[in-house]
Image (cartoon, rainbow, N blue to C red; front, side):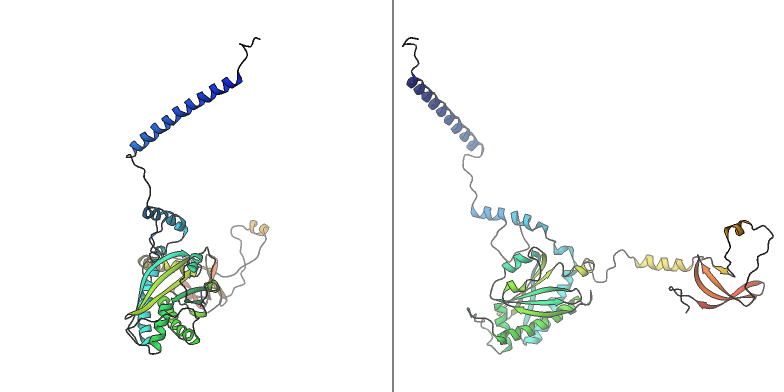
Length: 366
């Protein structure tokens, strides 16, 4: 091969590099054209979500009190919880509870005490413990008949308001909040007295539905020691507000769904005394018709035990001897069930039985 025909490697590399640059430039032009077309289709401006739209998408609106209204991702996360609206009787019970507690605490503090419900919602128990604002007192109470526990949280503002009201503090001034110290023995004692009143009213509120006893178990200041259910368990949260003129605070009642499970069927009622699957009109009609039903009775004069061969050997006209006499006691049965016993006699032209014993449902004479 001659020198002219030899391939110049450097020249080939330079040619390939030039071709690659040309292709890249054409590709950039195509991408820019595509971006311009997309921007023109979307209005010609880049759309960027602001913080409000991001919070709305995630379900965080910044209002901690509005637990019942959830949207976005928060709604999807909480969709597995059981909504308290499926237990309509709870509204009636806790409406009765706040009215009774307002009267009881008004007598307890000798002050104008008003209790109202902010909202009722479902929440995971672990999420609630993490959201408790400290300092606060957490009262764990035992539900004896249901063999489970509940929780009452009282915030510091209400604690200091109760202490001022019971110990003669000046009215018309907001209670002074002292940070950095634990609650004193006097404050613990006064709060326990108030909790005793609250739990008694809670018993009375549930009384028309089911007799139950709520008993204070312990008083805690650390949420870690007030764990009464698994963190992932669903619980019913009732947020209440107590107002004493220009002071007061908040109290929260937490009932895990496992606690109210024994009375779930009763809580499904829409009004007190509702009977599921029952109709008093049809019940009365059924009872009346049952008393008019014809029931066949059998009088057993005597019984013999015979072999199958003897039974097959019976013929028409054959006489069977009975051990019963004229004054023998006979048994009256209905569909094979003993009902009563008596003695056979005669009344006019009819054969009669004088009843002497009547059996109960346990087949015992009464």
